[in-house]
Length: 194
Image 1: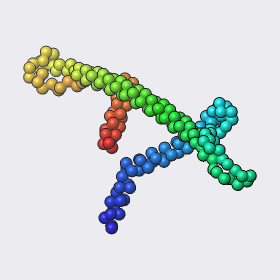
Image 2: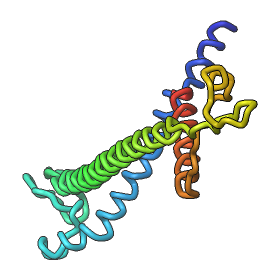
Image 3: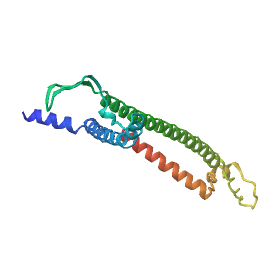
Image 4: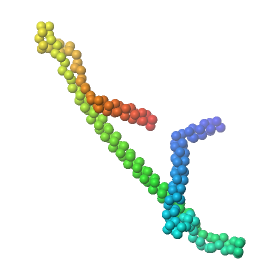
């Protein structure tokens, strides 16, 4: 029994189950909002077309009610198509809203990918520029020989310190490099979480 409870706890606490529960809750709330919107705005407009009749009250009477004064002898038989039409309108509004939400999300994803590609290209260009600047060497000072001759011998060239790369970056380049570094760190962290 204890093992069964532990398995159930693992099942309930899994991320997919919680995500699904949140999705169902949001969908239920969204349905209520769309239904309220339909009743508040769409139904009155449709009531103009149906001579003021409530959409959900529309029905097609197959057999009218038969009464004997106050008592009902035979119940009315009717098809309540108004409720179906109301549900159909709700469905169409929900589908339309979801369509626009998905279109907007697709547009934003496409735009984000475009920006990411531009940033990547810019980072590559900057990296190439930095590599070019770091690759240029400052000529080492030519050491003088003991007799004051400035021309260096092969031995003094070998003993001369390695040339120091020169890189004078502007403030904009430094800020851009920092942004690139931060973006790479953030991307690395996101990849770890996935």
